Length: 95
Image 1 (spheres, helix red, strand yellow):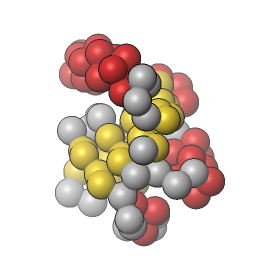
Image 2: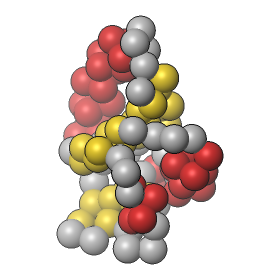
Image 3: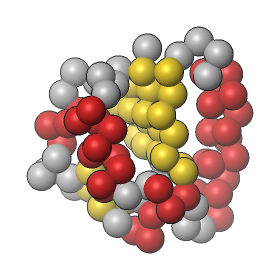
Image 4: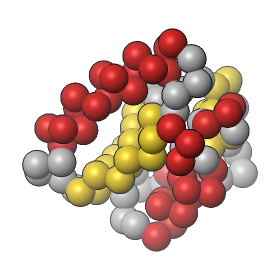
């Protein structure tokens, strides 16, 4: 299984999520191929690039957002109506 995980670090909430996700990643690396976007690498360019190039099964998005978007590093939009099709065929968990 291929898993993509985002861990932006913009405030106390995302720092908490990042710490929790670190434990999950340590366990997942033993059985799955994990792509982890962390800190400054949580950008739309990196996010879309991995989804386009790899056959991702599960996407775990941590961070802030709104009804129509998920944000990454420096509140950059990672996912919105312009690229939502990249999640087709994946299981997405957004926290």
